[in-house]
Length: 396
Image (tube, rainbow, N blue to C red; front, top):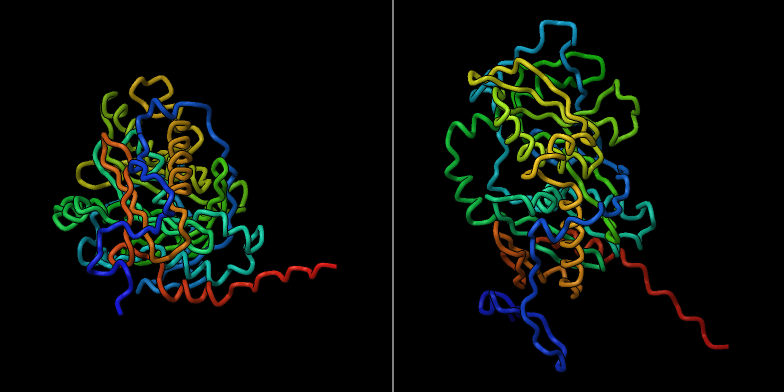
């Protein structure tokens, strides 16, 4: 017998409602920045719980083998002269973007470490588990004018899991990605090759292949307002010369951008690109973003360090700038909205949160494929591990 909510009933809301519940209008969440301009919410300093690596075949390893070491060119030298086009496309192995990885790698890590989580196993039951990139999208939503998003949410053993779903527009854009954009993506990875070494104290070797399957990921714990968070994000490198070798404060984020020549270009850079850099680095507590500025020929000729905590200063007096409080307040509001919307504990039930620029966040409810994202191997392993309920003491 096919389970309820499969093919025949796809698209129908499968939530069993109590008989006496008055049907309420579908909830939605507004995204207008003016609504979120209060004081900065509480955000716990992120602490690293652990890490994992993905190898050249995108296989998971519960260790730091893919971590690279920050090794910039000497400051007293002639400056960088990095050819970001070198090796394209013959020494390039891009990750297969058709493979939907969802939260799988993070769930592998969680299974390995669930018994040793700081705060005890019960801590996870109240937490939100997701990728840093998904939170970054939430932070920038009040100021985003072009790209919508979809986040699938499921509650399992009390924990709320959030996993991004590629929107039809994003998929169409990816499949029609022009050659120039593909080359620009390569350049970002190539820049990392010029700035990172495989061992502390050694020099970068840009002669090898650029393989974007390889990744080092940090797993972090934090709290935004009343929401405990466990999230993971890719880390470009660690700085062996950092004042503190304690992760995440020793990590460095590497970026490239085109050279700027006018105040207008810089203003646009501060308003748009710096917002995304800030959101991505603030969440995991990465203190610095090092940017390589490239000329039209694809050569990096200058480097600039942007301390994460100083990025807002560039737009503080800009009427059309962004405000960190708005970003974090909206993210906290979304997490509250998701927590109060997804109440049924069922890994096969998915609430799909959808947003398009100019509108509110809306919700639809689905069961099983194509939106269910918690793998059977994870659900079964976590279920087998459930502690038996405590025995109630017999009355005296």
